Length: 297
DNA sequence: GCCCAGGTATAAA
DNA sequence: TTTATACATGGG
Image (tube, rainbow, N blue to C red; front, side, top):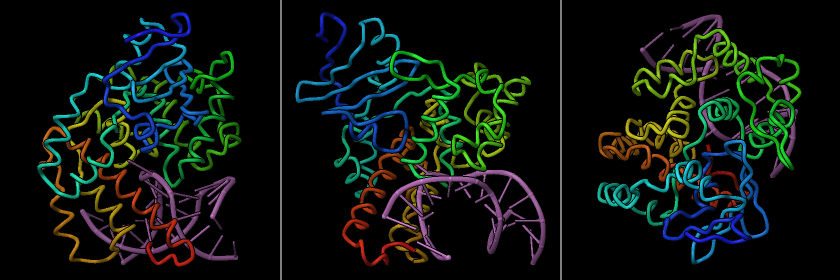
């Protein structure tokens, strides 16, 4: 690790992380492409990130911020070599996904922001999700020099539905209000959630209006670091049926082979890499078949 | 105008 | 328990 910009930036080498693969696999929403890198807002901070052969450059970032915040945020201590090896040995399609996105990492995001973000994500697309989250941050979050923090639950309790709707949340405004209401009333105590075991945590998340199977899975994965118990086959089925062979019963056996047990402690990672891979294929197909839309449903 | 988007609540079978 | 439909909104 070395410093630049008179100690206001940090260069990190040997992480194996690819910033583009990591930020653009659909797990986070508060980043923008900049000239040669990304501008990310997390933990009430603005971070500029660039990457070259030597490694990642983070700015502004002190050594202390790197150790206390960003090392964990970028999951730099995760053993991805082990995960990739394990997954690749199970299935050739998964191996292909791993080989295409070797630098894809999980981000350890803030639980409340992750919850709200994935509530917003339902029946929505990523550019619009990002826009909505940005509007909410501008309206309710703390103002800093040149950016806005994602609001706390307290900062959102003062909101009303029509105000939230003005951020284009649509029917999800009611869900966000339900969440902050449950936090305000003590039904949900964010600080206590991380102490729950995954099954209890899931149960708790499902009590929130607008939080179902998919949203709770994403929140457990990206906001609570639960990466073991994932219905990989369910996710793969959903996305494969949609993009590849809809209604083809012969695909069922194949998809069933993606059951979570098969990927052991790396089910979450298998899910994420496969999901990203399948969507990338679909998006390429879409590009190729711009005129004929038969690739989909 | 119609279809879609990292789904879920709701009613009805 | 499983299956249709509505839901807000903007882009293609």
